[in-house]
Image: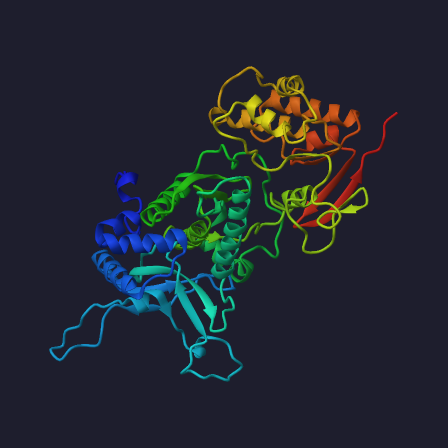
Length: 503
């Protein structure tokens, strides 16, 4: 029996968050720092000195001996350089613990830190780290001890981005500026800032460490390059609803504890659709904070896996022949949600992203359907239908009934089961009778009756002349409904089968 965990007590205990700042900073200093965080005001150096001293004292109480300006370089791997808080020894042999505002705000790695073809002027700084005060500092505990981590941006002396945080912050500022212009246009004169948010999902694979070490392809590339097809496919015992094995559950518990201490709101954990695949999803947060949290999540997953004699693979789809070959990404391309880096998507001779932004008549169910939590199914669909005003309330009710839901129900969407959510997503995709319908795994979370319902609806839409693109792992569904079947592996077309017409 493991020691009981009090989540509310440990959450954010290693984060220099707003609560800690209010407790440890003088009122004037706290207000000045909040203006910098909330409004982007320039930070006074004297304020920075006070904040740095308070941050250092707090971190030292947590056992921290070093600090680091942590950033995300263009390689996509978190980078850091550690400096101790100690000063030069005094004459009596003792040392002081110091951390100035200048050290908090900016770091100057010398030119030897960068590839330069052998030509180095090591006395000159060629890159500068700048404190991102909108993302809170935190103490990270690991084998190296406790380290005060300060989220930063990393730029060249000419202002060029050397990391992934700088473009993100610049794009957030651009969104803020243009969004405020729109708000003013619509009469909003009080809003001062518009902040985008994001909630990234982190999928990962766990492999036994000993088996991992026997595979050089996994060691060097993080994915399989050779070998036979997996001995199992999509039998659902590793699916979302499968019980989480005790070894994996113990791993997840340790991951959650570390993340919660660092203020990462890790909420959802479950098996994913492929063997050995799992998922962790945090709650939505301010965009740059969420990105920093995702870096922490990936780092923590790999670190904790090592302690459990496991290896965590963060490659999107490391195993050939299991779910994740690029079918959902293709759906997103066709729908216009993303733009292709190579090639084009054309509909009726018009190129997406060039001639048109989105298909003119389309219904989609791509991954998990998203609706307004506080509204009923009918209210959600009525709001969607109001965009084009092509159908009536009676049409909406008829579609809701067709997917096996009650159009008169006042139950809020947040109280829906997974199967009910999936049914409502299908209703949203077909209710306007579009010319093009994209359905990504429409039978997910559905029982036998639900699968029969999907078949019936798809057949009905086919009969009226709609083009339906169906992504599905159920061969029975595909064989019953599809006129053409494309087999995609790792983003490439593996085979194409046209069903012969029967007399």
